[in-house]
Length: 318
Image (cartoon, helix red, strand yellow):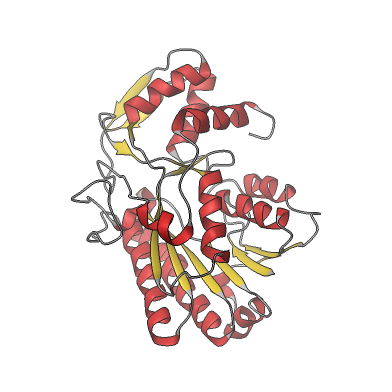
């Protein structure tokens, strides 16, 4: 089977590439290697992939490719994993929004057009729990109202709607996966878990936005990859499906810091900063639909996953 993965050099993308290659699939990765964070980290991710049988990479900005070039990328492709995006809540305000709209909405629409013109068997889109905003109930099911609390969340929901439109109008076999706070080895350096661990290992103060009583549903990257594979390869997934990919349990930031102390073997020092616009107080997703539709449930709990990420950040690879 031939698979296209956008954002192949990224955190989730590189892990997904590896998993598919291990299964014997042919993987074409596409990545722009943007400078949102240090591109050398993405190149290090690619070192795990380059030279593996079945892997090839095209360095390209999807937004700059012509329609014909996008169609060419999908030539002979059975499954598309559209993982590329402009990430982060805090940078999506003010003048930053134009970049988010282009990278997360316009590019997704153009890739869906290319999928419509081709014969791909599945189009898996990496969405986000940010589409829920301040949800009214927890754990939050896929039928809950969507009211994003940040411009980033707005762009992810808009792209989700596009996936639904192309499924309804043209039968494009889309599946949108709403990731809940993914963590693990190769996590982006701007993400909270990475920052907390780096500060704890170096004996620096950990900066926490707000009082630390925010609740997050952390999902280990190995579990996310398993959901990706099921969404792309499992039979019987209806076009336009939207599915939560969540850790199956929630913890406060303060509780997480307590687990971190145990993982690093010493107390951590915390400094509290003002809450940031766009940060919600709580996330927590129901995974019942994922269990029914994808045969998937999370397996790695926070203490185990955090210990694995600490070990990775302590290693030369981290």
